[in-house]
Length: 278
Image 1 (tube, rainbow, N blue to C red):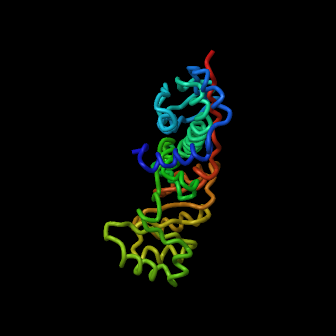
Image 2 (image 1 turned 120 degrees about the horizontal axis):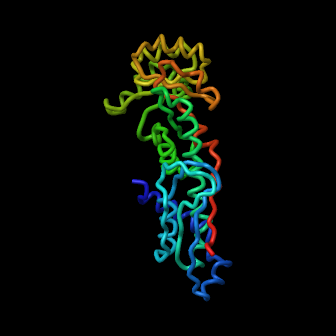
């Protein structure tokens, strides 16, 4: 559920951050009791995302304000399209404008960015995954945006999946020791993923019984060697500096997942504006 207690707290924090002790500009319009309608306008092609969050911003700020969107999250929008409107006291609408736009612009940017990566492998069975490289506090929303753009979520946090990364392995002394240690403390139903740096580690990960083996920063030819070693005994995930231009080179390979931090940490907010209707 997107609009839950966590999202509501985040929205309230964003409003508190912007409004502080009061909107010195918009307060001047309260005495006029002006009612107005403003339009949300997408100024570039995009995959829209965050409409429910924008609605919640205004509901939190002033329940009298009515927000209506003409599109659903996940729809592909063309440039200069009116995607929704907000009606109510002009002072409230102006006070919430930036916060509402910040949410919808950012989430639409992540969804649109993700769609580009997904479309590059649309004729394959490879799933594009996100990572934990997200804006602090925004992870649930940004991972929702990834799904909206057609991608898949990796673990939400440290609590819902095991991934033994290079530092874990080095601290334990080996992949074998790290896997044996972690399996002592997790339910048997939890899968164990291991990040590997070379073919020797891939072999050890297979022998240790890894459920998913990540090939971190492997060259294409080495990826195929690793796939041959794994030989279906574990799921194969590729990661590490995967660019949009590089993705087509991975077609035809027995890869299950490609995890890409750039889905979120390199996403650029989409240009969406809020303009008063005459």
